[in-house]
Length: 202
Image (tube, rainbow, N blue to C red):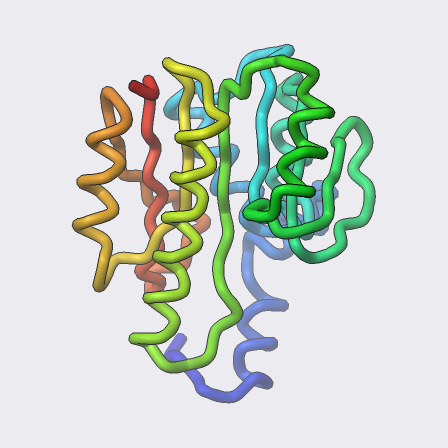
């Protein structure tokens, strides 16, 4: 399907999308749940009882997957999120001291073993601006990992190929033993998004 600039065309594509239909039929809140399921199938992200922080969690598709895998999930987003059974949700900006204090209170000294981030900015339509905003969110997520992810822990983050990507990849490689690039089948072909998986935080 040709890329259309009209919201009506986008909605037609979205409604007919295979993964949107599958998400509805299987009870997931977003099609992106299948991206996480595929990456987990390849890389074994989850194990029962582990502590996971889901950054930019709304609407909750990734949190749903993590709970199904038996993880203990703390989700953060600046936007509200309808409750997901078993998920502890904090609404607020994770850069703010008050929000981080809530997180630390909930952790009760437990180490975070996995951070997942599917954050994306509100799209302006200006490619340079959107790329800068998306990379900024990825950088914030990496900073969060440096402060809260335990040594040896893992980090999965959505990034968009373009300006700043190579520098971000270098920063990931400087902080994790290995960094893998993943492009799940549920990612739209025309999208420049990829997921970087950093394993073994240094």
